[in-house]
Length: 419
Ligand SMILES: [Zn+2]
Ligand SMILES: [Zn+2]
Image (cartoon, rainbow, N blue to C red; front, side, top):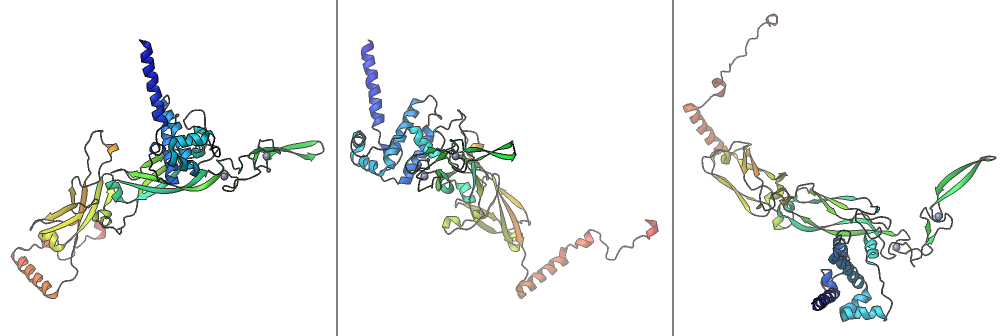
């Protein structure tokens, strides 16, 4: 009874290994065959963090994936082995490893990880591993992107572990213990203050610069400093309705060093000053909407005739190009500085501020009307208006001064004493 079951199980286990072992390296990294070196690096960075055993405790599939990703990266990041893989696939790589050419570099997957993120290859919050400082950057995007949502990129310059020497600082990989300080990085000097009276002073070892190590052949890329300045590009997903000033964390993407696990890169998303772009979709009225939370604000100018007589229409182009129509019928008066609230034409509300299965919701658009009076008129027009007004005044015009009982003469004030 047990034997066939066991056999089946073994077979399945074997199949699993075969399937996993044969997974295409490009597929594994989510790349196409013509992926650039940069894309390969990027894929490794993203996936190795995702499947790192520290992040997936007890999950064996994740661990296998972590190992497989490291292997795929090692093969594809080397020109020679990538070439072999492209031509002969997994078999070619196996043969190459067995005898063939130069021994391919082979790293422990955790070593490889530490080449990217510093430290000892772990980044869980256990083991008291030292973390580097977090890094904060501001990224400004236009209001349009907060409204529509957008996938974009930004670049930061940061310190990275030198990949030429893998963070050793040495061209040939040899690092010696400093023979002046014995590796402590500090030296104790004795000064004679007076006969028989000594003072001990501890100072940094200048033979090794306090490192405790010396390198005969310094890495030509980083000149022995083990790190280089590098520009890294990150993807940025701006979600619809994200609040201004929202912080987006990129784990372990801050400055790297072989001495610590890289801290986090924190992006502050801020709103760029409004500016009309070159493209059609960058020329909407919405570009100049002002945002407060989930609401948008806009000032619309009306002429005296429009404000007073009505019969007008305005087509506002919103941030996604749709039209919000404002209008009044003939005879509808708009008082200066009136604010009209148009519901659901504000910002989309960020999904994180809504209950889980909520439909999309929007704030309001507040339109303030500004009325502009003409400061000069055509002479004949002025004459006609004047005549009309005089006629109207004679019939049932209102004199506000008289209505409110204001005198035409100054009021006589009581003498000072009487106050
Ligand atoms: Zn180097
Ligand atoms: Zn030293």
